[in-house]
Length: 151
Image 1 (tube, one colour):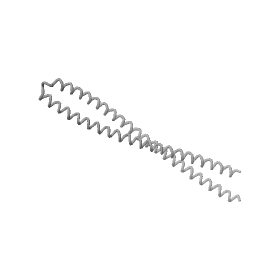
Image 2 (cartoon, helix red, strand yellow):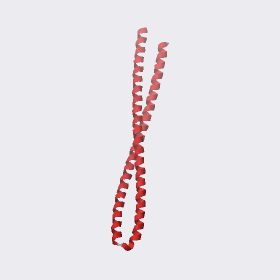
Image 3 (tube, one colour):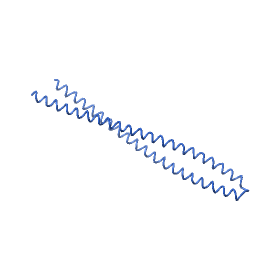
Image 4 (cartoon, helix red, strand yellow):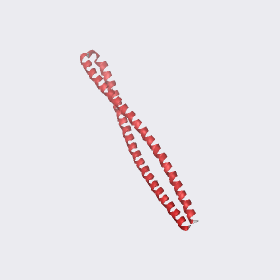
């Protein structure tokens, strides 16, 4: 009876361990999927930043051209001054957008680091489960030996 009870408890432990292992595997797959999503989002943000930098360079070039035109065409000074003001507002808006993108990049990097830590924790849990499995197998072997010795 004690051996049967022990075997039953051993099976229960094995079932719980398998359930935990499956749960952790599912959680790890979900984290890997989230990691891929974050990587894609990071790539998208990098492309947006490159696009912004190109727009910024184009804007800087355009501002230089406006300065040359304003010195040559004094009669259009007021029109060019208004355009320059608009460009400055665009530049400020773009700088704000760049700051927002930098903030988003930081958040993504922070989240990626957090996910790496969670992944490490999951790996430790899997190692613990594997150790429990090894102990369970040793226990079963011990019970089998005892059963044979009792026979």
